[in-house]
Amino acid sequence: MTIPAISYSDDQAEAHDRIAELLRGVGVDLDDDTLTPMAEGKSGQVMAVVGKAGSGKTLLLAQLYKALESAGVEVVSGDYEGRKRRDKRTLAILAPTNKAASVLRMRGVPATTIHRILYTPVYDPEYEKIAEWLTGQGERPQIEGLTDQALDRAHAFYQSNKSIPGALAAAGLRGSDFITGWKRREDPLDIGFIDESSMLDKRQFEDLQEIFPTLVLFGDPAQLAPVNQSGQMVFDALPEKKQLILHRVHRQTGDNPILDLAHALADPQLEFDAFERMIEEIAQRDDRVVMAQRVEASLMSRSPVLVWRNATRIRLIHAFRAAYGAPADELLPGEPLICDGIELPLKHRKKRLDLEARGLIKGAQVVYLGPGRKPGFSRLHVVGAEDPQVSAASIIKIEMPDEEEPFIPFAANMGAAFLHGAAVTIHKAQGSQWSQVQVFAPDLWAAARMGRVEAGQPLWKRLAYVAITRAEERLHWVVRNRLARPAEPLTTADLRSAPVPLALEEDQT
Image (cartoon, rainbow, N blue to C red; front, side):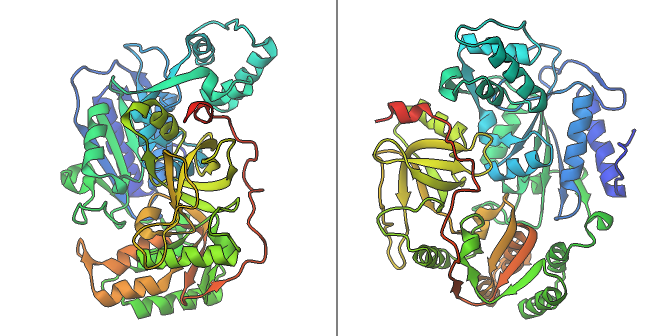
């Protein structure tokens, strides 16, 4: 096997060779850059690459993607698929959440969400001619109402960013012009790479196996397993020979105090108090780790405080809103939200699919931009979505301390439901990363005192590991139940300001 020019560790190189062998067996030879048509009925090829943070899973995924693309495999993005050809081989790179997919895209890997690949867009036949031309499957079209200059803009955009909706937007079209609806995928795909696969539940895994004859899972065994799966990830059930284990790549991550803390949690003798002393010692010599005496409200609008208990989450959200002087009956532009699902009857299935395709899936992180043009509508920025700004009917719920029912400051009759997102549970934070992360340590201390164990490891250690590894640049370990008031008001200036029109705002009742 020819290893790419990048320097692999021994276990990365072995994993690369094993996956290349798997792909060769299904007709994709990375050595010779040769492809043979996908064999009918050949399925059940599953392999997992597992390793803790810093073990090089993402690097390996990126290199395999580049090798497959070089061999002629077509990447399926979820925004457009050309005509099916018998000799075409395809790859889809998926993640469970918008944020996890955006982390990969920022590293040059064209990832999309699992949900987005389950549903495919239906294009207006006239504008589909542009998509066929851009993807090399047709001649340059003549479209009524579009000038040659507009088509040139679309072509130039597509050369630098392989996004059909983005190219059509560059030509001056809106999504509601060229996408007429969404349909459940009927035909199977080919090869699937699934990042953050520790978040998959059994049902999702079964759905993916129905769509992809060949699957490679990338996951972290030290994270928290999906709820109701007894601490087990889907890759735990694979035969040992199908699990490729990566260890920390020290030459790439050796000077990272956040990863040092995460890996220290593997010590079975380490107790909570000793771990906090370790954090304090590192914070004294490295400003990438902060032993914080209080929560910073100014960070909560873009990176939520990570907590274990729901009661803590609700208290911190109310402290955040009070610190910014938010009125009880409305939201301020810049307040963070978490999508809690779509509340629409079955007869509005198309509208549901439109919303979900734009990134409003359960767990999506959203920033409120302001009211829409109709009562109950909101302008929203969906964090990590490829086309982030939408306007949609919204049901905003603000949970109240010591009360079972949430307070609803305003709402449409139906639409996307949201909870406040200034604080989230560590479970919900899986798959996301932020440049700075605040971890509410009193909650983890409470978990340590309870002595709970999950999959053979103290729960507080799993919680701490997941929370710590959400931080890309700086970790704030908050030790006291206090909140520092912000120096500046909330803002949306850091977000793209012009919302992309969405047909739902025009026709939803």
